[in-house]
Length: 407
Image 1 (cartoon, rainbow, N blue to C red):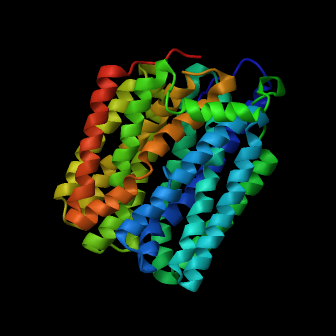
Image 2 (cartoon, rainbow, N blue to C red):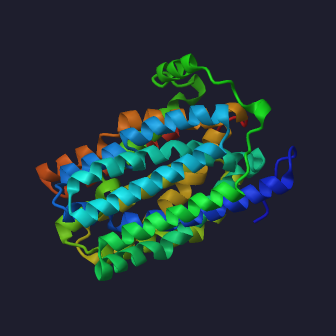
């Protein structure tokens, strides 16, 4: 991949950072995928219900309330104290989280899942810093490619890690998988501590003033005018996927009795499509713009969720995962390039965090709502909510969201 580096600063440092972030994302993907493949069956094995599973996702999942708060705080602090410290802190929180979840499995106490997911939520404090470092390691016209590269490294790990996680769970138990995840996160912590370089110079950092954070809290409900329609679209997206796709593994475990190994195979198939297509799509985002690929992602989501409604066999769900892998492949580089190109460097992490907080504060109940829909009407309830939400996002993007002006 031929990525253009920023004209200012040490180009070798920028290149090293891009390589380090790519390797970090690969290892992070290994950790995420082996654990994610067994997470929902593991929770259900401890006696949790679907609404409780949804509640745990709503608290500390990818769009959970704790994760949301950390995105906001992490982005704000990262623009004031630099990027690297918060990437390190996030990894340390993840080590504690996985160790706590392993303890829950060892003691067979679902109550210990709560502190575990709380620490997982705290680990989101580093996400705006990682995204900002990626954007700051290349020029604006190459950001789609850069995000495509680091996202592809995550997706490559997902080709085999979920199947491996499911296989290990079947052979050695859930505890082994959780301990392996903790060990991988320790490796990530060591890598970023020794190899990652700061990308926000001291002169670009904003002084720390506590009252400004409270102003930021107020601004969450009033996004900048030029970003407002984009905020609306991606917030509907996170709620839609939260009700269905986020808890799909649990739904399939309860409805069709899929094993962790089968769920791992499904995730691996999806990741294979993602990895194969990601770099090419990232390049196309730079050439043709962000919005067409955001719309394409949501259109694919409508087809895939519609397929989930009619599929009955494991083989049918596996076939749908081929298309499912194209959803993040088209969404992630377009989403990150759109927001990165819409704000100046010194405010980038804060805006990424604020966007994550806006989405999270409005979307965090979605997995719990999905669990309640399952209890009320079965499998079709949460999946239909996912499909309707994706269709709404297409309309908002098509009618109201344009290409950003590069900052």
